[in-house]
Length: 153
Image (tube, rainbow, N blue to C red):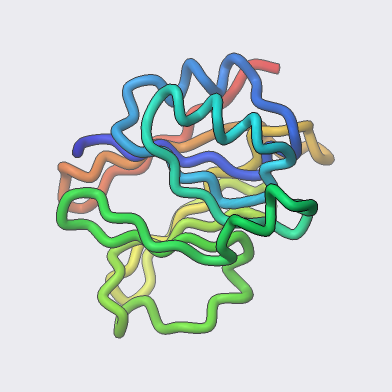
């Protein structure tokens, strides 16, 4: 396992540029607000997908999605949820190295108590003047590398 692709807030729109950016991923994490189940199927053609339900994911297909998930990338444990403000555990105590979330549409990364927090931003329809992007984790490096990839509209 080398690369984990991160995507969030597609809201039913999976851009060809997002698919190109995620090529080569060994695992893809979708941090919610997917929009349609077809998006998960398309991502699954690239790599295995771990996905969580976001606040706009409604209907029977979305009921099967968990609100939180745990993904393993080699020796790295990743906690996934849509809105980081709804986290109800201490990721340090739970021995997670990475927390992936979406919801805000604002890409960013920070480290707190030895845990890397990453929001890949929104890959779906543009919201306000926020960038459209995905992210990639290089789980071979220490510290874990994060690359944000802007998407063509």
